[in-house]
Image (cartoon, rainbow, N blue to C red; front, top):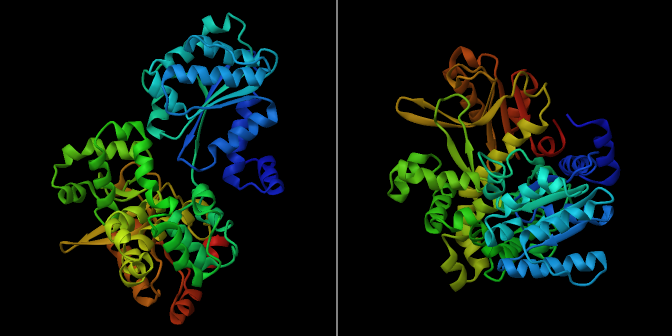
Length: 495
């Protein structure tokens, strides 16, 4: 639970609650009262505002900010020396080694506590794999004995698996970091606030389905152009995403290429796995079958994609060892379901015609549905009140029922905390339909699913999440204590 101070600060400053949490966590780290240098890590997807947050704190607190690029170690030292000299007003400083550079950096906090940020840390590590050990030495007892002061050294990066590995296992920096801030894309409610008309929820749903909550995708990478209304959505998708000239057109390929853990392995396999998931193969067995591989052979690559933040692993709330996989970002779903399979057609044909005649159907079946289902799960996890979903919400995810040899997909299942999925109490079951009118048949399906789950689902709340509903269903919902109808207004603004 956020403190009242953070809530108040967020309201006054205009920050979202997630942004306020990130700012508060970073501020607490930078403000800690200790007469020694400390270490913090900040990481997350590209273009979600990490650098903006850190650069703002550096400017406000009179700190030092250095953004690395992909160059050799000697060039890093040269550029860092120039930046340090400019910061100190003494002209270029010649740095002869990494150790000397780190010593100079932590000494910036000799007189006061200030942030010292090394952004794009992955590029520094790529040029010199010994850097974490050197940092550990600089921040350790031998470094402190030289009167290093109170620098707050922050390492920032976008390669999630690489940044996590800095403090994992027997890594040199394990136990050294006082902050490990993982910044996430904004949720669907925050994303809607960037639209010209945030009240047009049909547009909000459609735009989020295409680009998700990454702030850079809604600003610089679409030239600050978002659709004005539903009539403008198709134009926007064609011009800002589908067009080969659009910045977003190649974004997913660039993201994978820039992640060292993925680029050093098998890029073709990684792209193939992402494509298989985006087009409906969401279990390890189905992915392996689709790619003509054994599950055991596929597991390392699938694990790398999960660790790198490109794939989400959904543990089944009610079945043991039956995880499903989903792409971690709506834009990735759009890319691998729409852009990647149709890249050659988009280059040789008019994108608007191709979108209208063929790709909208693919979008409806492969993108809108999966993304909206995750939005519904986010609503339950973050925004639904206890009146809407009574009881525990320890596990929220998709599941499947098996009946007479047929699998029956459930978009949303909520259970308590019990360790054994087979005995967890089910507190809610839900269906989420993005472009389908929801009626009594959807309700009947949930009632039947609850019945098949047996006594552990007795009293489970039934959730129907969508944009349009039959009048008779709405009338029925008024007299049922076990049914919650969640329309777009409630999804975005209610609980």
